[in-house]
Structure formats: C-alpha cells, structure tokens
Length: 168
Image 1 (tube, rainbow, N blue to C red):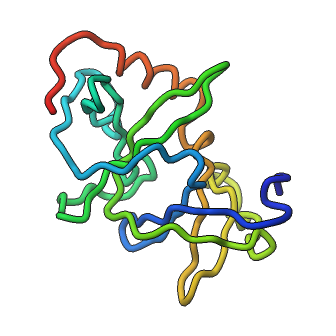
Image 2: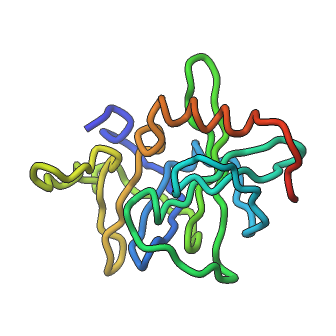
C-alpha cells in the first residue's frame, strides 16, 4: 500500500458506473461538468469519445464504462464529465472522464482502505488503488494515473491539441 494510504484521512469523490461505486482522490479532480456535446475525433479507440471545450481549451474525454469493458449506456440527467488532472512529466494533463453519476465527497480513514483484491491471472486490476466498505456497499478507489497510462495521457493530450472547431 502506498504511503499516502498508510495514515490519516483521504478525501474521495464517489461516482457510479453500471451500479458499481468508484472513487477518486479529490486532489486529482479539477471540476465536474454536466454532460455536454463532445466533438468526436476519427481513428481513436471507442472509449475515447473526443474533446470538449473547457473555458476555451479542448479537453479529451474518455467514457469510463467503455474503458473498463462495461456496456455503453444511454446518457441521463445524472451523467457527468469529471475533469481530472493527471501528472505528465513535469506538468499535468487535463482529461475528462464520463461517469453515470457523481455522488458525493467522502472522508475515509486510510486505515479502513484495504489493498485491491487479487483477481488471478489475466485480469488487470492495477488501476485500483484500494477498496473500502462504505455503508452497505464496496467502494473501489481508482488510481487516476494508472487508469490513464503515460502513453495514453500523451496521446490524449495530443487529441486535445488537434486544431479544428470544438462544440460547446
């Protein structure tokens, strides 16, 4: 377990995907947007939805359902785009992540966070930072830097730098 999980309290933003609760360290969350038009970019993986205009900047958007191998879902009034800041070299890259809903910010004692369960060979769970019980459900804590690998962040960053109109 990492040092940041070894003592104290962790503030987490909770979100849902297909009735599963996930959480992100609040420090990597820049803002939460209502669902908006996304300008698609040809020849990108299916989970890369395109770019959105965030105060004049093109920010690449990933559909977390598709990224995690879940079926696509209809957009609802609760669908949100969470704008994350992912470390990249000396700076950070802004990336949007589509979630079915954003729930709340929780404070969880790090002592209550267990390491991710071992799932066996062939199943990638390295992007799960930890797991904890919250009320009657489990909360999977995501490691945003591992959800979006370095190569992926670089290619997403290039996506956001593409010229052309961005639909707001």
